[in-house]
Amino acid sequence: MKNRTFIQSIICAVKGLIYTLRTEKNYKYYSAITLVFLIINILVKVEFYCYIFQILTSLGVFSCECINTAIEHLCNKMTMERDSEIKLIKDIAAGAVFCWGIIFFALEFIFIGRALLC
Image 1 (cartoon, rainbow, N blue to C red):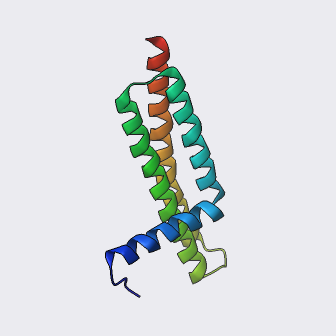
Image 2: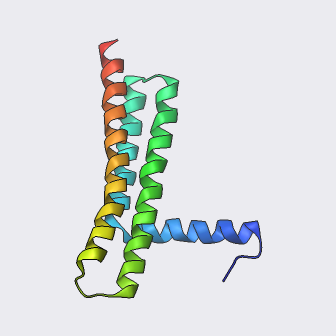
Image 3: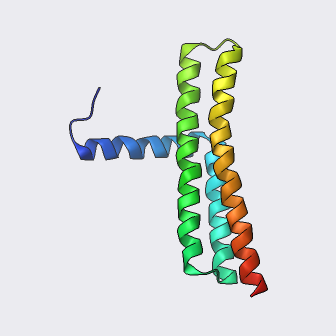
């Protein structure tokens, strides 16, 4: 069913985010890791632009995790039997989350390292 208004679309999106946060342990881990790095960034006084990159990369991880969750639910709806093609689809979606995670950690280590060395 299609949403009738923009507000309805936003409400559905927020419900999806809440569902993912409540049910996906990795989403909880990413949230905690982001908070820890935010605190570290504040303590070591990284430059302002580093916070912008933290927000962008965090949102990349979170959005990919939402897409990954949606793909997993869709695949599970199709069949609960072990299927090599469905496993491949799930692995590819998880790979997207992993790529964003690498970017997030790499940038955080660069930013924190620069702040500590300067």
